[in-house]
Image (cartoon, rainbow, N blue to C red; front, side):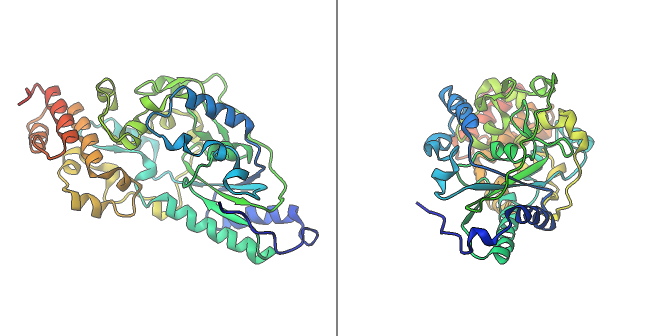
Length: 364
């Protein structure tokens, strides 16, 4: 188990209040839109997590329970941790109108906007290390570890306590001035920095996200059944997508943004200044048939450096087959599916067969 080393400089030599303000400025200088600081007490979030796991809402995401309480107790994951520096970085690549136009076009593939550009893990991790090094330049050696969705970390609960926003009814973090189109990252540290005031919940009586969810995965305010969520079905799930959800998936081939698109707080969201988050290979306007025609080497090459690559080629074809089954019936759509009818993967064949049935094509 990794343990934080002792702070090199004596505590009396450091003005932690001034250091905290400096850290926030350095973070903004590095491209983060906001930096907050919190302690490690996540008892309320832990209770919510335990109940969520007990109800089985995590589906096949066994990693959510594999590490026990380390996820909700930072000091168990990294002994010596006193504070968490939480950051957010905006990633919105285009307007909501442009996203909605693509979502409404059944011949196009809709991919969650966080995944259109370079893998965010790499972008944020590099900046967080730079921020930690800047702190080290100021105070000398100190204990820290950087996380970007890479370990058992309750990042949304930490960000909420650090004042970056509140966890909305759709379970995403929302910021009053920036909406929810942003990534989160953390630095666990042994520096006894002053903490920020948690954000105030501001969803009010709005239930737009619950109503818009295509598969009704948000079963109640602040309660998400991941087993029904399109993001889970198209990214985390490795097996067959339950038939009951296939039609509702529509043309969403990687993730789903519906609850963010409908959220009224996202009228304050701004386009990201980060070039790395701009769409690659025209993925924000790609045709389903075009993507379905890629062979595996093409998929691996075009998705190099993208978070999409981790689902693998077979899941990629599975998702596209479902979307083509939901597309209007045309000779081109049917022919594209027929080309994959005898694919070596049983998983692909199953979903292609279902898709052809939606176009009145009988099984072999």
